Image 1 (cartoon, rainbow, N blue to C red):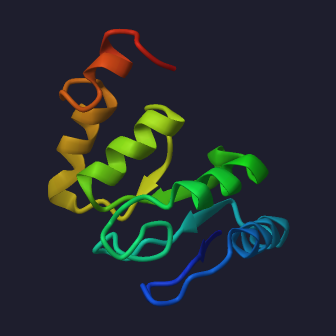
Image 2 (image 1 turned 90 degrees about the horizontal axis):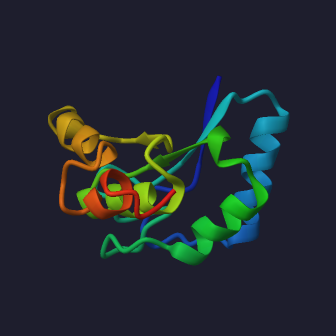
Length: 125
């Protein structure tokens, strides 16, 4: 079973501790993975209205919850790059448009300039 935490409303901002409480509650209730919401446009939930990553929120979630149990919505390339650089090539990403799957895989493999240094050239992980 999957669950989802967050809001598709860019005007609604939940405090990080509320995200953590809701995620932990869903996992305790039996969820296998919890999706951190972002909306298809990548402009709500774990991202700001302009698409910028809410780094403090994500760091607080990651500090409290095993990220293997999370799926981070990341519909925009910049968001995908950030998540991969922060959590590694195998992090769980969701809300990827079908036409972007190959592009995302090239990011994961370090075949794009955004991630080549970190993953293909041994600069990270």
